[in-house]
Image (cartoon, rainbow, N blue to C red):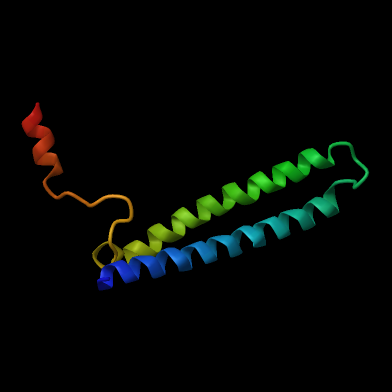
Length: 100
């Protein structure tokens, strides 16, 4: 395994761990706010729990994407990591123009 692949695996594992931590924090904060703002005996409590759950997932997604973008630009990770799903093609634009 080359160095780029090892960097990529380490980055993915660390990012996943941080993503789970952020989700737990958002869920906990949202649940505390829900406890303080909504009556526990309310018939809408299950709805609000669902909203809190979706908010924690959506909020985590937004924070994760912004964080990865900032870290990628700051540390120039495009040069240090392998692409995960496909290889980048430098001549892709040329091939597209030639087909037309």
